[in-house]
Length: 115
Image (cartoon, rainbow, N blue to C red):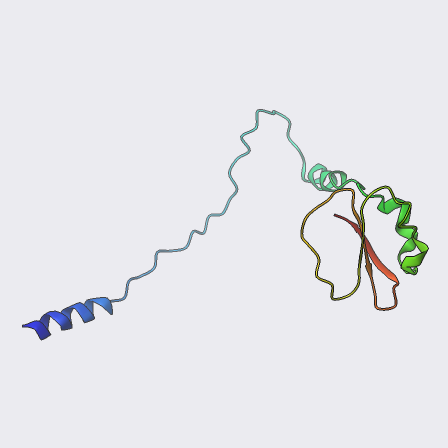
């Protein structure tokens, strides 16, 4: 009798269960804001650019891309500066006014970004 019960328990554990169908309707929910203003797709894409201001002074230093990092005066810059050599480990904290310089092995600026 014991063997029969154990066999039933083991067999019930091996029973397959069909998975439910995945959700196929992924339409976003309606905007619940109180605004009656309808925004076109073109205005939305333009807004993305407008929402990323130059908070750290990239515009003033764009000409440094391709130049040696020594040509940037870090000592007199009023905000935090981070020079990032290749392979460096950096923190993921976001500081809006911090300017980051990615440099190559020769110390040439390859990218400038805020954060």
